[in-house]
Length: 198
Length: 198
Image 1 (tube, each protein chain N blue to C red):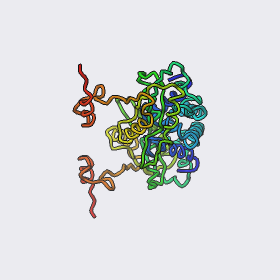
Image 2 (image 1 turned 30 degrees about the horizontal axis):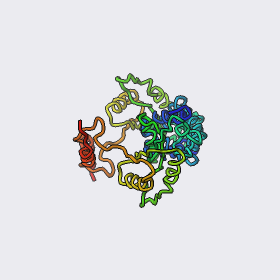
Image 3 (image 1 turned 90 degrees about the vertical axis):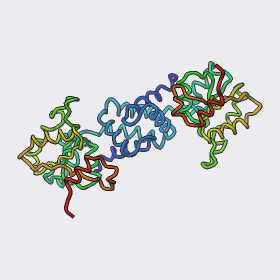
Image 4 (image 1 turned 135 degrees about the vertical axis):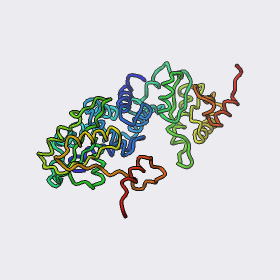
């Protein structure tokens, strides 16, 4: 590649750093962008700039928004006394899409991990303890992943909060639309153990 | 999502239009970008803007560069009398990475297709015919895909150029590092028919 195409090469290199894109798919994406210069490339450059300028982490819950304290934390409607603890902003967004939870969130920013030396201070767990009092929390829903690290984190948080608040976790069982044949043994066991009378 | 996060939503929607990304992976990519604001999001926005301003199709061969006539078309070193005909800019880039071809290119921009009503005029085939004389071309290498549409296009171009120039196509056979066990019947047949004495 010659000198005058170095911007294109640099763009491909940057795009290849996105999760889910490698060098080959980044090349494809950049060619697509150049072909759709007015419809896609220009708007995308502008919107990335806008988001880079305005996006920030909520100082209270860790959600990503455009203000220091996010809309969910400032809305009085969401002061239900319930806090849903999630691992990641993506999980918070997934909960919001379902629209079923009316309270506030607390984003941990990961899970405890001895291997990666992630401790409680790295996960906003002290901030969670502080919020319990300042926001009159009555229930903490531990909506972390059903992985080993997720469950370790849930147990650690439960230990920390024991006695001061009602603690719950998401139900485990057969997903809606799920066929038993395709489910793993762990899920089937959990669903059978938590069976309900009809 | 509330009003103040609409830029983030708009960015996710634009990212989801890239080939290889869907709504879910676009969300993941945008979260990643926001977390790496200084290292990735800002440079990416700037570089997209730069490419949007400078990138253009070479008027002669269809390559993408930053000048009206690309570096390959202007370089006197590449005036070897050989033109390599490829379907797409991505194919041109792949050929350039191998570094084996020293001549110039002609990017068709697709393949002939009755179903999608893509005719010869849509594929720069008339421009190819014009270039043969103006650039003293002695050999045209048809480096199109070994698909049905690709081969149809190759046959059409061969018909158009017959007699005026030497026509060649890429060899077909076992890929380097390829194991026979994993190859399709067509490739094995082609490789056997084109077998060489050692």
